[in-house]
Length: 377
Image (cartoon, rainbow, N blue to C red; front, side):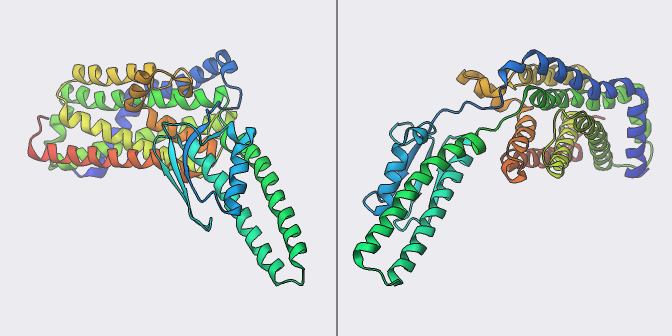
């Protein structure tokens, strides 16, 4: 027996025997998203409340451009989202003396805050370079020193005014976009049931083991490694089918996953591989169904309590809950889709996608090594 027939057998068996359960993984999060979206809609106003970003800003404030930046940073509108006077910095920003190179070193700021800072300083730098180009042209022109001084003074004053205005617009339009309630819960409940699906995928193995199906499978010429690969692929395919149907239904209903369809599909693929990898790790290391339900059940509770499945994860203020949220298994999935929906850029989701890929690879390798060394099947 080779891997392909095993994959086909596992998929057919799972959909045949657990058809109702698998369908519920499409319907249940959809219903929960609609209910929670309507009940808690008032807590989502389309604007994210972000405190001023505490920045350790290093630049030459004695130059003309530096003095302009000083004035911009003193504006009340800019102060509402960039704080250069506070302590306990969230990031460091270093600007070269010629204002051509700007380096942002993130200490503990969120990706949304870094996006705001990056956009602000890129805009400022772009305007500075334009001013320098104009200055060179003025110097070459046939103007008196008094006329040159007046022209450059007007340009620098205009730069100052433009930066204050564009900074405020940056805050309103770029950095503070967030999700409405139905869109958020369409994603959060999906991330929650993604953990529950792992129990179904894993327990199918233990049910077949108890029924003697696994023993009969190994009566054919198949190694432990081949069986594990077959289980991994079949679990990943089943997870992908469930996930993609849920996503497409949400898109059709106009609830969630409305931005960057290609990016959404990519995250769905990575999520499905992660679910398959975790399920494979479970059957490789855990010996019985009860232990599986206990361990994964704990992570399900953790996702509900601290993972933002049933409330806005951005509203968490407790440091303890934030720590729990960081280790909750659903948060990577939730934040990946959430970040994509906000930024509409797959690049901004890499901070969540890359850990998912690494975790999947590590779990697959560990599973393969375990069954090769010793495995009670």
